[in-house]
Length: 459
Ligand code: ARG
Image (cartoon, rainbow, N blue to C red; front, side):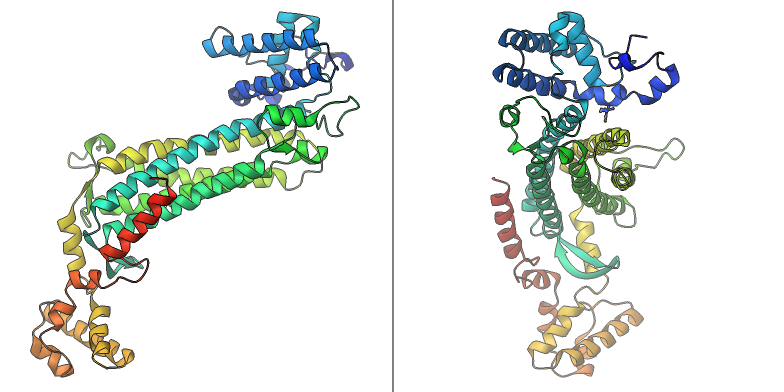
């Protein structure tokens, strides 16, 4: 095993098991680009501030760029025995440059290095995830535009409640996703302060220029407190919260897709490329993707609990417990991306079975509120109208009829206010068309919110 960089104080090599236990390169190796980016900014600043010579600064920078190119091309492989990505790159630099390489770590600690790397890494990931969430929202808006007239039952308690349209239902998710995008952007903004220059915890005696490194790395400003700089991971928690909410939204939608694919609903049919079969039951076409998304939501929530529990008892400043942040937040980020990338084309290719939606809406008395409203419009107090309609529904159930097929005599037995026009008033089309309150399901109202969403999405 190569000698550890901190070997000076030690008289023995570290135990191999301990080394493996302690090492984080297996999971922090993915931040190599960001580690090098941070080191280049640091070396530039060291040179500009005269802490190292300009010549050494330039040599270090080109050495780092070469390492980056070699890792990118696969010429240089990460050493699984290295303690972490920061040590690996510094060791490689020294291997290549000799003494000059050893100057890079002047006035810097791995503690501020890791804090800067995760921020840079997550900043990129947030951008990628936001773009995917946006793509999903755009897909839904497109579908919604095709289905402003597709009537389906709206549910409460999973009981058919009132008529809505598929567009109205899909748009509900678009608004959730738009808030998700906003949450991601808020997190990114709050996270975008630079810890570099915090040192191990107590800053440095060198005359560094933290504003320069912050600016070079695209941060808004340096973090104002060095202890906070190296020991805060609240941005990981905040991001994981935003990711958990994205997953919650995907999971609720997934649950609906699972139901909509069942023979009991049959509202949609998934494209063959986005469903799976059974090893034993030849008739099966299973919505595995949506079930996996539902399942992975638990896992992303677990990552959030990992982060919160890891942080809760830690004294300031850095503690090795914090190395556990990366596996959790990376797992959350990876899984959200995986889910979005599969969910989007699955939705875009699914077949909508409009007739079945319409037929489901025709059963279950979802126009009962409209029947009561009909009487209210003729002057009856709502509570009385409600009671009469309830009695009519009971009569329909008894006679195996619907409100649309119940004879007018039955209506008029309850009150003479009912006339022939009741059938028009309780037709599903009327029920939907008249629900034109702002945010409601009428095609006109939904078109208005589609226009708003399109604006928010920059379409
Ligand atoms: N691998 C460590 C981490 O992920 C880097 C920081 C190590 N700092 C230290 N003082 N041991 O947190």
